[in-house]
Length: 148
Image (cartoon, rainbow, N blue to C red; front, side, top):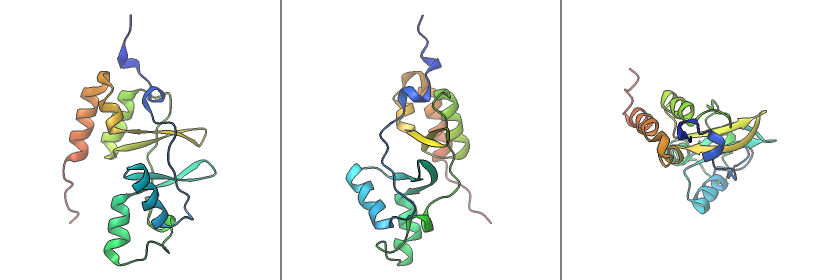
């Protein structure tokens, strides 16, 4: 009897994750994103996730403010509060966490060390989790209300 609903994050996560260190420049982060055709990088120091930097972070916190990406450090523009998952959590739980925190990518950490990353697309291609991915995407894609 096979039951795909028991799939674990470790079964679908990307294990060879491109990362960047907090001391590297935003320009280096953008170059890695361009080379790998990705929109986000975990910021890692000594194997530990310290933050995330996205192409949107670069656009809003560097480019739009006229800052020089060759001199701005990743640490100055990264998101510090990173939601993470564990390799043995269920795919459904990962989808729930992503929906709850409105994130499209979930770094997977074990013993404080980065093990991989799960993207919403990984969950969507896991047929057992299609419904979970749809729900997560619906929640993430809803426009947030401006803070008044």
